[in-house]
Length: 231
Image (cartoon, rainbow, N blue to C red; front, side, top):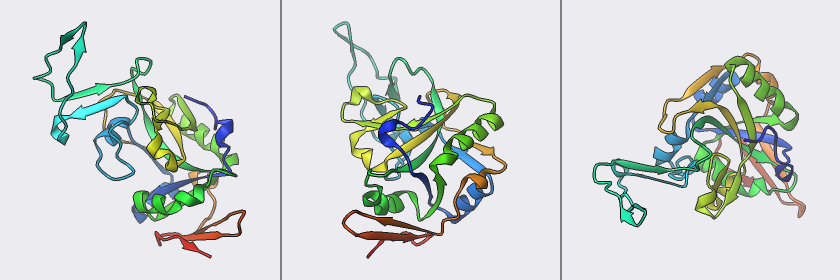
C-alpha cells in the first residue's frame, strides 16, 4: 500500500460522495466510516458493489453464482460442500478496512465522470484540498493507533493483477484514492466508524462544484441536487 498519492495521479483535491444527507452531516461532524472488501464483494449496488474487489475472483452460491471447477495436479477438486470460493493474491493474506475518495487532478478528466459519480454514490459530497490529505491520514492513524496507508488505485484489465490496490479497468472512471485502515480477515463484513475530532478542519466549505475545460465548457453541480448542469 502506498503512503502517498502516486505522481501519476496528482490530486488538486479529493471528493467523497454520500447517498444520504445524514451520512454527509455525520462525516462533517467527525464520524469517519470504513468498510471491508468483503462488504463490496457481496454488495449489489451499482458502482459500490464489485465481486472482484481486492481479489482475483469471488463466487458465492447464495448470490446465485455457480462455483468454477478447480483442478489441482491434474485432478478435479471436490467443491460440492463449498458455498463460496475466494481467490486472492498470495501476498495479501489479510484485507484492510477501506475508505474511498475520488481524485480531482489537473488533467484526469474527472468532470466527465461527475454525473456517473452522483448517480452511483449519491448527491451529497465533501471536498478536501490536497494539502490536507496527509494531516487527515495522520488523524486517522493517531485516533485508531493502527497502521494507515493511502494511495491512488491502479486499474488493469488483467484479473491476475487485481488486489487491494488494483481494480478492474471498467471502474477506472471512479479515479479512486483509497485509505487503508489496519487489517482484517478476508470474510470480515463489519464496518468501522472512527470519531475524528477536528475532521471538518480538513474540508472546504463547498456547496457547489464548478469544473471548466480547456475548450471553455463549464460543468456545475450543487450539493444535494444530483444533477450536472453544463454551460
